[in-house]
Length: 105
Image 1 (cartoon, rainbow, N blue to C red):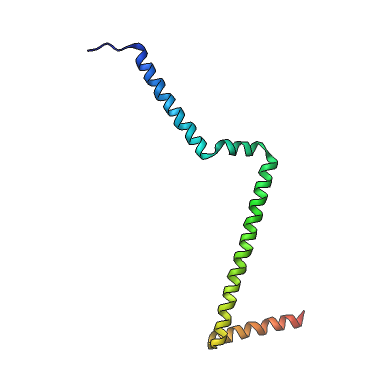
Image 2: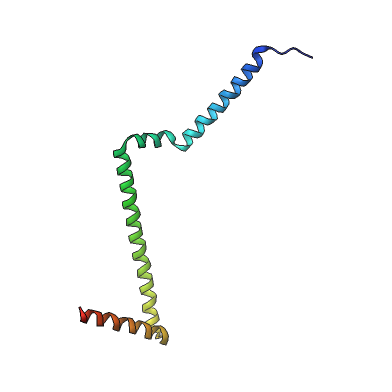
């Protein structure tokens, strides 16, 4: 049985530890943890980033709902032109209700 060198096991463990530390640092760099921590240290920057993110989300929702409403109105107009009795009567009732509410106010 060959005799082990005392420093060899330690150097192997140190090399393995060094490799794992390199992997960890690369993974942390990929995750952007340093940038995130820097952003948390600067509250003004964090506020403005969140402000602009919220503003753009709200703007996107407004545009999305506008497009969705336009599509729904377009198809309702097409249904009225087709004169589908059930839907046409329903829309006529809605128009009458809205007109009555406008007269009351």
